[in-house]
Image (cartoon, rainbow, N blue to C red; front, side):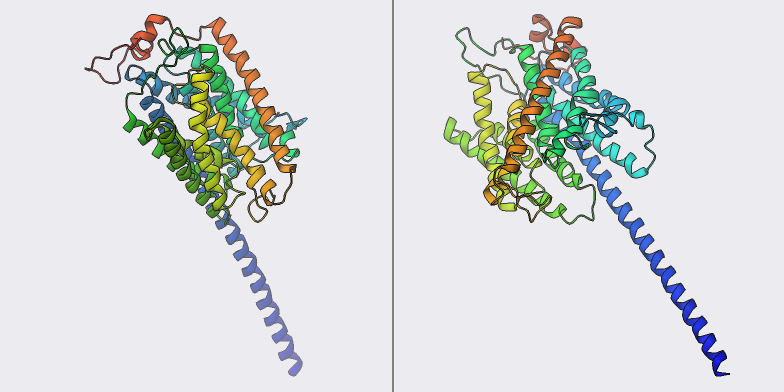
Length: 443
């Protein structure tokens, strides 16, 4: 009798143990499913916010340029996304994240062929928003004198090839990643690529009519709507929380906290740096410079946001704000390169500064676990950052020059003089942004 009871007890305990194991396994599976769903939602939300930045870029560029070109600005910002996204889907994503060939480019995943996991498809969506950002940066520096068809032509190449190759080098497991180069959310991958392409485009085009006098003095050509530009900057600032924060691609990554804090502080410091430096430099607190200072701080913190402290982010943003004012003036008055919105200074120059800042201010207690020069890490990370900066500049300058040269001789790059004086809205699109108002030339 006792033996029978013991056997029954053992069976009961065994069944109970099995049930507990099954329950634990089920709970683990549910926990993993919930984690995946939460992380996916955060990544997609980040993509939504980055897409919203297209509106910010459109408003900033429209506000900082003349009323007679506002329709053209909107058209370019609409179409560099609408045209660039399908080409990134067809070619760019595969070049960026496909199976690596010698660490130089990817060679699989074109048209998302073979990409079947929902997570990977969601990741494509997130990355497509970044590709669109790199393309749209170019628009501002080439504003008010570029043929619309030439801009569309260039958009295809930056979305399908120029940007994705750099992305593969750094985010796709390519040679720069192997060399230790770090760029969390794209100071170099996105912003310097767009900024250097913008520089090449502005050089190829030459300055706007009336921008420089016969003796080489720079004449200001004010934007027509600073409130519109300010709204664009606030939209961009908001979208940047998805740009930087979303780059964790995981809501369950606690480092989101430092990313969002450093992003906010750097933007704020950038505005302060630009405003107060312009006040000292020009005698008045220049609000347009302060607006660009916000963007300078944001661009600068985009690479190191995951690896630096809140205090360091203030320094990085502040220097970015000062740097953008000095750079805008140098590019305009010394180099005589006409960049109507300061895109080269904001994205190219401050992208370089932010990338270098990681090699200076990184702390091992954050993100990637590396120390920069100022925190006992020596020159190793700084040298890796410098290599990446130079390599990306050479690549973008070379490929952009080829594309713009082809565009210039095959389809025409710059509009005719009469079209520029009339304004691209009417000459290129047959529309006005402000119908009923008379828009004057300021030759």
